[in-house]
Image (tube, rainbow, N blue to C red):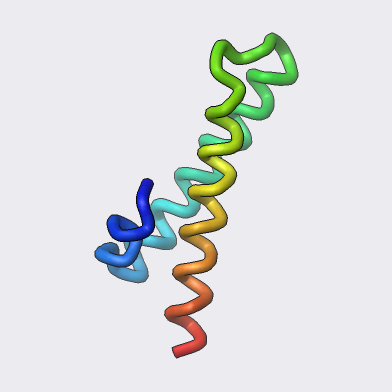
Length: 63
């Protein structure tokens, strides 16, 4: 998910998306621990998406 897409979401949508993305990241980590993923770069991409969402939420809270 790109930063421009994240900025267009409402705060409620951001919180929902953050929860979904964190769950997705946890599931990917578990799957990778059991057997290696075909594309381990997915982990990095999902982790960065979580960070982008959290950062945008923090920025909105501070304003």
